[in-house]
Length: 312
Ligand SMILES: Nc1nc2c(c(=O)[nH]1)N[C@H]1C(S)=C(S)[C@@H](COP(=O)(O)O)O[C@H]1N2
Ligand SMILES: [Mo]
Image 1 (cartoon, rainbow, N blue to C red):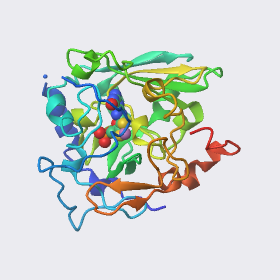
Image 2 (cartoon, rainbow, N blue to C red):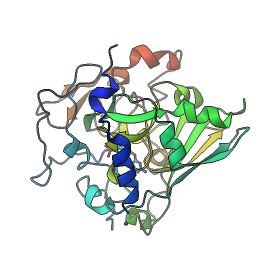
Image 3 (cartoon, rainbow, N blue to C red):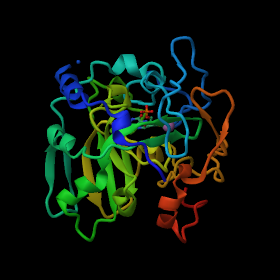
Image 4 (tube, protein in one colour):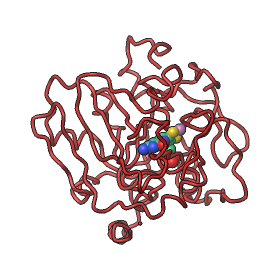
């Protein structure tokens, strides 16, 4: 599959803007029915600009147009700030992303705490990945990041390690949604170790050639392109190699609705909505959802012999 070359989407001033970004620094209502994508999805109101992509704009691996930057950064799921997708950007704008460390440990030979500067050095590869949140909506987002496997190699996992568990920052002063004790904070996600080691799994530190803005998970978040959007845990502070399958935020919130795998699969419905189609933000008609979000060639073998209806 042909990839867009990094130079097409990554301006040379990336590192400068990142420095500038790092230099800058500083109330949630409980929803009746919580869902990873907030379905039913409200139509974006006048507050959200949905500009058409420029004609010259790059596309992803399947030829789909990129979602405009303004849309990606003004329509977000981030329950630590708000259950309302359009409120996340204004409420998170002063979120402190520096200094920042990610503690990597658990079942490893070399536990280590990485400063953000070190993590940014790993950002040697820039790729385009598609984020789908197919419960209700999807976007095509040119994330910039580096393979998670690069980080895991640094800590030398023990053979006992079977899963990777990720944790978001817990700071209710900065993240008003965490004052709501109705949910299980901090946000947690998990991957099987082979999923975590897959090339397509990245830790993202930017998008559209710019540093990640707070609403999209700054300074570092997970992207697993063949899974539903909620697996993409934001503002990660801790990564542990573990033996047992981690219980994710969504599994804990709604055990009958969310499983561990969360692979994009049009044939397996969420109990409250079909997952056969998705609304691409910026388009009027719904699209058919593709198995593994179009990455079946690369990832299907991870699930050989697994019943995807049971392991959803
Ligand atoms: N810490 C944290 N990470 C999170 C969430 C969240 O509420 N908190 N929401 C998830 C969900 S449901 C989605 S769809 C994606 C949305 O990412 P985006 O806002 O960058 O598009 O983030 C995921 N990561
Ligand atoms: Mo979501």
